[in-house]
Image (cartoon, rainbow, N blue to C red; front, side, top):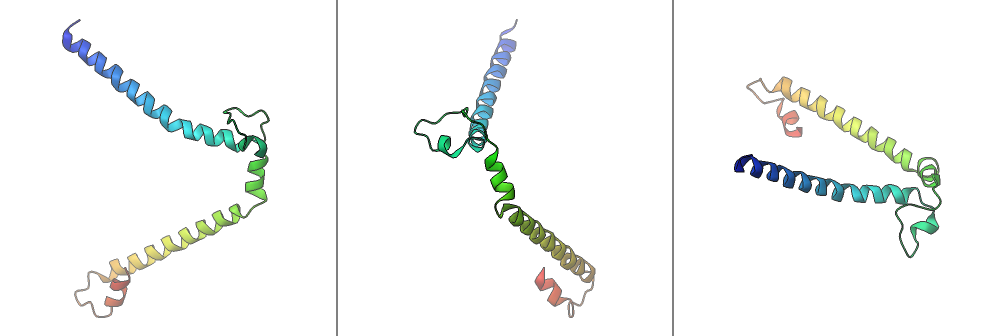
Length: 114
């Protein structure tokens, strides 16, 4: 095996090890969030934190999805995003239709809005 091929293999191993370290470093907080989401309250605030809870519960999900205002907030955010997208499309469409006109007399109001 030539020296350049060995150097290339070594470089590939180093790059893959660094990529694996980055992926693990990125996934650890996501795992901790999931682990905390299935713990009961007394285990969340325990003095010694544990990755795997003794008592797995999905009550926290039920509380958030059914007993809080979070679904209503998602609905409101979706409606605001939908309306703002619609307004941008309408005003942008008006601007595109009025833009080819060389006299910006009546079109100046709509051009200022966009």
